[in-house]
Length: 342
Image 1 (spheres, rainbow, N blue to C red):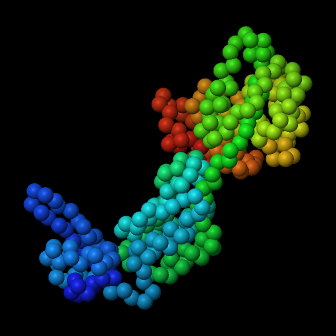
Image 2: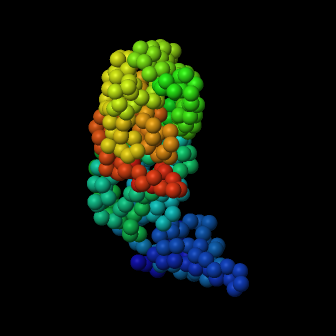
Image 3: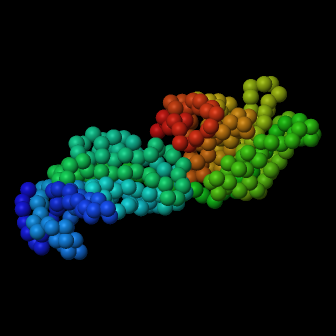
Protein backbone atom coordinates (compact mmCIF):
# COMPACT_ATOMS: atom_id res chain seq x y z
CA UNK A 1 0.00 0.00 0.00
CA UNK A 2 1.29 3.44 -0.92
CA UNK A 3 0.06 7.01 -0.36
CA UNK A 4 0.17 9.29 -3.41
CA UNK A 5 -1.33 12.61 -4.47
CA UNK A 6 -4.74 12.19 -6.09
CA UNK A 7 -3.74 14.10 -9.21
CA UNK A 8 -1.05 11.45 -9.80
CA UNK A 9 -3.32 8.45 -9.18
CA UNK A 10 -4.58 7.81 -12.73
CA UNK A 11 -4.16 4.12 -13.59
CA UNK A 12 -3.62 3.07 -10.00
CA UNK A 13 -5.80 0.75 -7.93
CA UNK A 14 -7.60 1.97 -4.82
CA UNK A 15 -7.09 -0.17 -1.74
CA UNK A 16 -10.03 1.35 0.18
CA UNK A 17 -13.63 2.46 -0.36
CA UNK A 18 -14.42 6.15 -0.70
CA UNK A 19 -17.82 7.30 0.51
CA UNK A 20 -19.85 10.38 -0.32
CA UNK A 21 -22.30 11.90 2.16
CA UNK A 22 -24.50 14.89 1.41
CA UNK A 23 -26.93 15.53 4.27
CA UNK A 24 -30.54 14.66 3.38
CA UNK A 25 -29.48 14.02 -0.25
CA UNK A 26 -27.17 11.06 -0.70
CA UNK A 27 -24.98 8.54 1.05
CA UNK A 28 -23.18 6.16 -1.27
CA UNK A 29 -19.82 4.70 -2.26
CA UNK A 30 -18.85 6.13 -5.66
CA UNK A 31 -15.40 4.51 -5.53
CA UNK A 32 -14.83 1.03 -4.16
CA UNK A 33 -11.72 -0.85 -3.20
CA UNK A 34 -10.19 -2.21 -6.37
CA UNK A 35 -11.35 0.65 -8.58
CA UNK A 36 -8.82 1.73 -11.21
CA UNK A 37 -8.62 5.52 -11.08
CA UNK A 38 -9.30 7.34 -14.36
CA UNK A 39 -8.62 10.92 -15.42
CA UNK A 40 -12.36 11.61 -15.22
CA UNK A 41 -12.41 10.52 -11.56
CA UNK A 42 -9.98 13.18 -10.35
CA UNK A 43 -12.42 16.15 -10.06
CA UNK A 44 -14.91 14.12 -8.00
CA UNK A 45 -12.21 12.70 -5.75
CA UNK A 46 -10.93 16.20 -5.06
CA UNK A 47 -14.49 17.41 -4.42
CA UNK A 48 -14.78 14.69 -1.79
CA UNK A 49 -11.75 16.11 -0.02
CA UNK A 50 -9.38 13.39 -1.17
CA UNK A 51 -6.08 15.17 -1.81
CA UNK A 52 -4.27 11.86 -1.34
CA UNK A 53 -5.17 8.24 -2.00
CA UNK A 54 -3.88 4.90 -0.81
CA UNK A 55 -3.16 2.69 -3.79
CA UNK A 56 -1.81 -0.78 -4.39
CA UNK A 57 1.68 -1.04 -5.75
CA UNK A 58 1.57 -3.44 -8.67
CA UNK A 59 4.25 -6.08 -8.49
CA UNK A 60 5.67 -8.27 -11.22
CA UNK A 61 3.65 -11.47 -11.60
CA UNK A 62 0.53 -10.06 -9.92
CA UNK A 63 -2.79 -9.12 -11.55
CA UNK A 64 -5.55 -6.77 -10.49
CA UNK A 65 -8.93 -8.48 -10.01
CA UNK A 66 -10.35 -6.82 -13.14
CA UNK A 67 -7.47 -8.06 -15.30
CA UNK A 68 -7.93 -11.56 -13.90
CA UNK A 69 -11.70 -11.41 -14.43
CA UNK A 70 -11.13 -10.67 -18.12
CA UNK A 71 -9.02 -13.82 -18.40
CA UNK A 72 -11.70 -15.95 -16.71
CA UNK A 73 -14.31 -14.45 -19.02
CA UNK A 74 -12.27 -15.41 -22.08
CA UNK A 75 -11.86 -18.95 -20.72
CA UNK A 76 -15.65 -19.29 -20.50
CA UNK A 77 -16.91 -17.26 -23.46
CA UNK A 78 -18.23 -18.84 -26.64
CA UNK A 79 -20.49 -17.85 -29.53
CA UNK A 80 -23.98 -16.50 -28.75
CA UNK A 81 -23.04 -15.06 -25.36
CA UNK A 82 -21.76 -11.71 -24.14
CA UNK A 83 -20.20 -10.36 -20.98
CA UNK A 84 -21.38 -7.66 -18.62
CA UNK A 85 -19.27 -4.74 -17.50
CA UNK A 86 -16.60 -5.70 -14.98
CA UNK A 87 -17.59 -4.86 -11.42
CA UNK A 88 -15.33 -5.59 -8.47
CA UNK A 89 -13.58 -8.41 -10.29
CA UNK A 90 -16.82 -10.00 -11.51
CA UNK A 91 -18.14 -10.56 -15.04
CA UNK A 92 -21.41 -12.29 -15.88
CA UNK A 93 -22.17 -14.03 -19.18
CA UNK A 94 -25.54 -13.41 -20.84
CA UNK A 95 -27.31 -15.43 -23.56
CA UNK A 96 -27.65 -13.63 -26.89
CA UNK A 97 -30.16 -16.15 -28.28
CA UNK A 98 -32.56 -18.88 -27.23
CA UNK A 99 -30.77 -22.21 -27.10
CA UNK A 100 -29.31 -25.12 -25.18
CA UNK A 101 -26.66 -24.13 -22.64
CA UNK A 102 -23.90 -26.66 -22.05
CA UNK A 103 -20.98 -26.75 -19.63
CA UNK A 104 -17.81 -28.82 -19.66
CA UNK A 105 -18.27 -29.80 -16.03
CA UNK A 106 -14.97 -31.64 -15.64
CA UNK A 107 -12.88 -28.66 -16.74
CA UNK A 108 -15.10 -26.31 -14.73
CA UNK A 109 -14.47 -28.37 -11.58
CA UNK A 110 -10.74 -28.44 -12.23
CA UNK A 111 -10.56 -24.65 -12.52
CA UNK A 112 -12.68 -24.16 -9.40
CA UNK A 113 -10.25 -26.43 -7.54
CA UNK A 114 -7.68 -23.65 -7.94
CA UNK A 115 -7.51 -21.14 -5.09
CA UNK A 116 -8.85 -17.58 -5.22
CA UNK A 117 -10.83 -17.79 -8.48
CA UNK A 118 -14.35 -19.03 -9.19
CA UNK A 119 -16.74 -19.71 -12.05
CA UNK A 120 -20.42 -20.38 -11.27
CA UNK A 121 -22.81 -21.57 -14.00
CA UNK A 122 -26.31 -22.78 -14.64
CA UNK A 123 -26.74 -26.53 -14.92
CA UNK A 124 -25.50 -28.03 -18.16
CA UNK A 125 -28.08 -28.94 -20.83
CA UNK A 126 -30.31 -26.08 -19.64
CA UNK A 127 -32.79 -24.55 -22.08
CA UNK A 128 -32.29 -20.78 -21.93
CA UNK A 129 -33.87 -17.68 -23.41
CA UNK A 130 -32.14 -14.65 -24.88
CA UNK A 131 -31.07 -12.37 -22.04
CA UNK A 132 -30.79 -15.15 -19.44
CA UNK A 133 -27.78 -15.16 -17.15
CA UNK A 134 -25.53 -18.13 -17.97
CA UNK A 135 -22.56 -17.85 -15.64
CA UNK A 136 -20.55 -15.55 -13.43
CA UNK A 137 -16.80 -15.33 -12.88
CA UNK A 138 -14.99 -13.69 -10.01
CA UNK A 139 -11.58 -13.30 -8.48
CA UNK A 140 -11.66 -13.53 -4.68
CA UNK A 141 -8.78 -11.21 -3.65
CA UNK A 142 -8.08 -7.75 -5.00
CA UNK A 143 -4.70 -8.85 -6.33
CA UNK A 144 -3.92 -12.38 -7.53
CA UNK A 145 -0.87 -14.23 -8.75
CA UNK A 146 -0.74 -14.31 -12.53
CA UNK A 147 0.47 -17.92 -12.37
CA UNK A 148 -2.95 -19.04 -11.08
CA UNK A 149 -4.66 -17.61 -14.15
CA UNK A 150 -2.05 -19.28 -16.35
CA UNK A 151 -2.91 -22.58 -14.69
CA UNK A 152 -6.62 -21.97 -15.37
CA UNK A 153 -5.83 -21.26 -19.03
CA UNK A 154 -3.83 -24.47 -19.20
CA UNK A 155 -6.83 -26.45 -17.90
CA UNK A 156 -9.13 -24.76 -20.42
CA UNK A 157 -6.67 -25.79 -23.15
CA UNK A 158 -7.86 -23.15 -25.61
CA UNK A 159 -11.45 -24.41 -25.73
CA UNK A 160 -14.30 -22.44 -24.09
CA UNK A 161 -15.87 -24.02 -21.01
CA UNK A 162 -19.35 -22.94 -22.08
CA UNK A 163 -21.46 -23.50 -25.16
CA UNK A 164 -24.81 -22.09 -26.27
CA UNK A 165 -26.36 -23.97 -29.18
CA UNK A 166 -29.18 -22.04 -30.90
CA UNK A 167 -32.33 -24.00 -31.73
CA UNK A 168 -32.79 -25.05 -35.34
CA UNK A 169 -35.96 -24.26 -37.23
CA UNK A 170 -37.43 -27.72 -37.78
CA UNK A 171 -40.54 -29.24 -39.33
CA UNK A 172 -42.17 -32.04 -37.37
CA UNK A 173 -44.82 -34.66 -38.00
CA UNK A 174 -47.14 -36.35 -35.51
CA UNK A 175 -48.67 -39.83 -35.75
CA UNK A 176 -51.61 -40.34 -33.39
CA UNK A 177 -52.46 -44.00 -32.80
CA UNK A 178 -55.67 -45.29 -31.23
CA UNK A 179 -58.94 -46.74 -32.47
CA UNK A 180 -60.86 -44.52 -30.07
CA UNK A 181 -59.44 -41.37 -31.72
CA UNK A 182 -59.41 -42.81 -35.24
CA UNK A 183 -63.11 -43.65 -35.11
CA UNK A 184 -63.99 -40.32 -33.50
CA UNK A 185 -65.13 -41.77 -30.18
CA UNK A 186 -62.94 -39.34 -28.26
CA UNK A 187 -61.16 -36.11 -29.16
CA UNK A 188 -57.40 -36.02 -29.74
CA UNK A 189 -56.16 -33.99 -26.77
CA UNK A 190 -52.52 -35.10 -27.08
CA UNK A 191 -51.49 -33.34 -30.29
CA UNK A 192 -52.33 -29.80 -29.07
CA UNK A 193 -49.99 -30.37 -26.11
CA UNK A 194 -47.19 -31.44 -28.46
CA UNK A 195 -47.76 -28.45 -30.75
CA UNK A 196 -47.44 -26.05 -27.81
CA UNK A 197 -44.28 -27.70 -26.51
CA UNK A 198 -42.63 -27.68 -29.93
CA UNK A 199 -43.56 -24.04 -30.48
CA UNK A 200 -41.33 -23.11 -27.52
CA UNK A 201 -38.36 -24.20 -29.62
CA UNK A 202 -39.48 -22.79 -32.95
CA UNK A 203 -40.54 -26.20 -34.28
CA UNK A 204 -43.61 -26.34 -36.52
CA UNK A 205 -45.92 -29.35 -36.82
CA UNK A 206 -46.50 -29.65 -40.58
CA UNK A 207 -47.98 -33.16 -40.78
CA UNK A 208 -50.47 -35.01 -38.59
CA UNK A 209 -51.85 -38.50 -39.18
CA UNK A 210 -54.47 -40.25 -37.05
CA UNK A 211 -54.39 -44.03 -37.48
CA UNK A 212 -56.08 -47.14 -36.12
CA UNK A 213 -54.36 -49.71 -33.91
CA UNK A 214 -52.96 -51.55 -36.91
CA UNK A 215 -49.30 -52.13 -37.62
CA UNK A 216 -49.41 -51.33 -41.32
CA UNK A 217 -51.35 -48.10 -40.81
CA UNK A 218 -48.84 -46.88 -38.23
CA UNK A 219 -45.84 -47.83 -40.40
CA UNK A 220 -47.35 -46.23 -43.50
CA UNK A 221 -48.12 -43.01 -41.62
CA UNK A 222 -44.57 -42.78 -40.26
CA UNK A 223 -43.03 -43.38 -43.68
CA UNK A 224 -45.37 -40.96 -45.43
CA UNK A 225 -44.48 -38.19 -43.00
CA UNK A 226 -40.79 -39.04 -43.25
CA UNK A 227 -40.88 -39.00 -47.07
CA UNK A 228 -42.67 -35.63 -46.98
CA UNK A 229 -39.60 -34.04 -45.41
CA UNK A 230 -40.23 -34.17 -41.67
CA UNK A 231 -37.12 -33.46 -39.60
CA UNK A 232 -38.65 -34.92 -36.45
CA UNK A 233 -41.44 -37.49 -35.99
CA UNK A 234 -43.48 -37.94 -32.83
CA UNK A 235 -45.77 -40.90 -32.18
CA UNK A 236 -48.47 -40.90 -29.52
CA UNK A 237 -50.68 -43.69 -28.25
CA UNK A 238 -49.96 -47.41 -27.97
CA UNK A 239 -46.71 -46.96 -26.03
CA UNK A 240 -47.29 -49.31 -23.07
CA UNK A 241 -46.46 -53.02 -22.86
CA UNK A 242 -50.04 -54.18 -23.44
CA UNK A 243 -50.30 -56.74 -26.29
CA UNK A 244 -52.49 -54.40 -28.35
CA UNK A 245 -50.13 -51.44 -27.99
CA UNK A 246 -48.28 -51.62 -31.30
CA UNK A 247 -46.44 -48.32 -31.67
CA UNK A 248 -42.92 -49.38 -30.51
CA UNK A 249 -42.89 -52.33 -32.90
CA UNK A 250 -44.23 -50.23 -35.76
CA UNK A 251 -41.51 -47.61 -35.23
CA UNK A 252 -38.87 -50.33 -35.46
CA UNK A 253 -40.45 -51.81 -38.60
CA UNK A 254 -40.56 -48.36 -40.22
CA UNK A 255 -36.79 -48.54 -40.61
CA UNK A 256 -35.68 -46.56 -37.57
CA UNK A 257 -32.92 -47.80 -35.29
CA UNK A 258 -34.22 -47.88 -31.71
CA UNK A 259 -31.81 -46.10 -29.38
CA UNK A 260 -33.83 -46.82 -26.27
CA UNK A 261 -37.28 -48.01 -25.31
CA UNK A 262 -37.57 -46.99 -21.69
CA UNK A 263 -35.95 -44.18 -19.71
CA UNK A 264 -34.97 -43.85 -16.01
CA UNK A 265 -37.21 -40.80 -15.66
CA UNK A 266 -40.54 -40.36 -13.89
CA UNK A 267 -42.80 -39.34 -15.47
CA UNK A 268 -41.78 -40.80 -18.82
CA UNK A 269 -40.45 -44.32 -18.24
CA UNK A 270 -42.09 -45.69 -21.42
CA UNK A 271 -40.35 -43.16 -23.68
CA UNK A 272 -38.88 -44.39 -26.98
CA UNK A 273 -36.17 -42.74 -29.06
CA UNK A 274 -34.91 -43.84 -32.46
CA UNK A 275 -33.15 -42.46 -35.52
CA UNK A 276 -33.42 -43.11 -39.23
CA UNK A 277 -30.27 -43.58 -41.31
CA UNK A 278 -30.30 -39.92 -42.36
CA UNK A 279 -30.35 -38.77 -38.72
CA UNK A 280 -34.06 -37.94 -38.49
CA UNK A 281 -35.19 -38.53 -34.89
CA UNK A 282 -38.41 -40.37 -34.08
CA UNK A 283 -39.91 -40.50 -30.59
CA UNK A 284 -42.66 -42.55 -29.02
CA UNK A 285 -44.29 -40.43 -26.33
CA UNK A 286 -46.01 -42.04 -23.34
CA UNK A 287 -49.36 -40.70 -22.16
CA UNK A 288 -47.83 -38.75 -19.27
CA UNK A 289 -46.54 -36.16 -21.77
CA UNK A 290 -50.16 -35.14 -22.33
CA UNK A 291 -51.02 -34.38 -18.72
CA UNK A 292 -47.77 -33.86 -16.77
CA UNK A 293 -46.12 -30.44 -16.82
CA UNK A 294 -42.61 -31.89 -17.07
CA UNK A 295 -41.54 -35.32 -18.34
CA UNK A 296 -38.63 -37.02 -20.07
CA UNK A 297 -39.80 -35.36 -23.30
CA UNK A 298 -38.97 -31.95 -21.83
CA UNK A 299 -35.44 -33.17 -21.06
CA UNK A 300 -34.79 -34.64 -24.52
CA UNK A 301 -36.55 -32.10 -26.75
CA UNK A 302 -34.17 -29.14 -26.15
CA UNK A 303 -31.18 -31.28 -27.09
CA UNK A 304 -32.75 -32.44 -30.34
CA UNK A 305 -33.96 -28.91 -31.11
CA UNK A 306 -30.34 -27.74 -30.72
CA UNK A 307 -29.15 -30.29 -33.27
CA UNK A 308 -27.60 -32.83 -30.89
CA UNK A 309 -27.89 -36.56 -31.44
CA UNK A 310 -29.11 -38.04 -28.15
CA UNK A 311 -27.47 -41.35 -27.25
CA UNK A 312 -28.53 -44.25 -25.06
CA UNK A 313 -25.90 -43.11 -22.57
CA UNK A 314 -27.46 -39.64 -22.47
CA UNK A 315 -30.80 -41.22 -21.55
CA UNK A 316 -29.42 -43.68 -19.01
CA UNK A 317 -27.66 -40.87 -17.13
CA UNK A 318 -30.95 -39.03 -16.62
CA UNK A 319 -31.82 -41.31 -13.71
CA UNK A 320 -29.92 -39.10 -11.26
CA UNK A 321 -32.30 -36.17 -10.89
CA UNK A 322 -34.90 -37.84 -13.09
CA UNK A 323 -37.62 -37.96 -10.45
CA UNK A 324 -40.25 -35.22 -10.77
CA UNK A 325 -42.19 -34.38 -7.60
CA UNK A 326 -45.28 -33.28 -9.54
CA UNK A 327 -45.56 -30.10 -7.48
CA UNK A 328 -48.95 -28.41 -7.31
CA UNK A 329 -47.35 -25.30 -8.78
CA UNK A 330 -44.85 -26.42 -11.43
CA UNK A 331 -41.72 -24.25 -11.70
CA UNK A 332 -39.87 -26.39 -14.25
CA UNK A 333 -37.21 -25.76 -15.50
CA UNK A 334 -36.37 -23.76 -12.38
CA UNK A 335 -36.29 -26.87 -10.20
CA UNK A 336 -34.12 -29.94 -9.69
CA UNK A 337 -35.92 -32.19 -12.20
CA UNK A 338 -33.50 -33.40 -14.84
CA UNK A 339 -30.55 -31.48 -13.42
CA UNK A 340 -28.48 -34.44 -12.22
CA UNK A 341 -27.55 -35.67 -15.70
CA UNK A 342 -24.35 -34.33 -17.22
